[in-house]
Amino acid sequence: MNEEEKQVNTNNIEDSGNDFKKKPAAVAHYYGDIIRKLFFVGSIVILVTFPFFYSVLVYSGVAILGGAILLILLAGLTSPKQKLIVFFNSVISFVSVIFFEYHSIQFYAGEGDDFIKFFLFVISYFLSIIFLFAFYFSVKTLRGMFSK
Image (cartoon, rainbow, N blue to C red; front, side):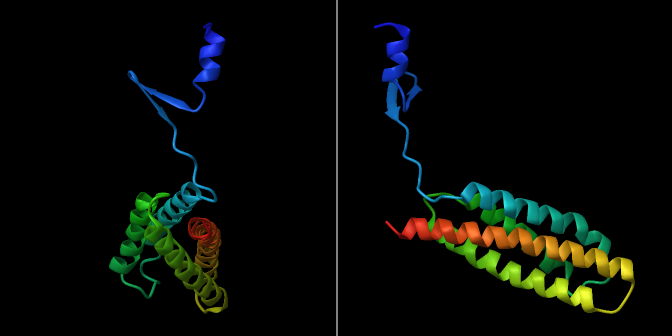
């Protein structure tokens, strides 16, 4: 058997020493990698902007930091084998969309320094869009997991 025939015969086979194993089939409609990245970006935006606006936010620092860490925890636990985590991703992203969109409206219509209001509006709006995409992909993943 020449080299080309060996390559053709070993497609979809993973070499781990002397053992040959078939690669696991991809999960249909799994978008966990995208959800993980969106949660990670959202958490980074929250952590980077939080110190600048701590004095004008009505929530405690512990709640804000806890929310950011919860996002990282869910991103780290996201897996095609974990249906419950994908469900939690859907719930957390849904709540986050409502939370950040509500606050973007409040910052847009509220009183105070125009620069701070505008910047908080932009950050909140950006976060609501990030979590809207995360919600969409979470629901698609959840649908794919339960539609078998």
